[in-house]
Image (tube, rainbow, N blue to C red; front, side, top):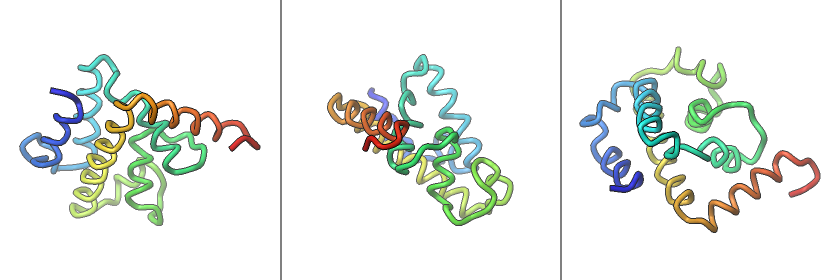
Length: 129
């Protein structure tokens, strides 16, 4: 089973995989899954989210997903976890899984992956875009 097929199943029934409880639980589960895949599953996810955002950032994927889910909410990054209600947690987990599936489609296509890295590099070189 591919990573994409696995996460399609997880997205269809997140409670079965223990991912409806909180964003933190989903985050930790993904970290564990990524480690089981020798770090290959999420390789490039932060860069992909950075390109999607269109600006350089020091945030990792964990915080970038929360920033996309709640762009107008203070505080920033993972500090948002301290103030999320259950509905917001569910929204964040759903967005995380949606974004992950989009990313995996790009990651598994060599042309799209290469294009993403070119755009990522351009973000880090002012004047070249």
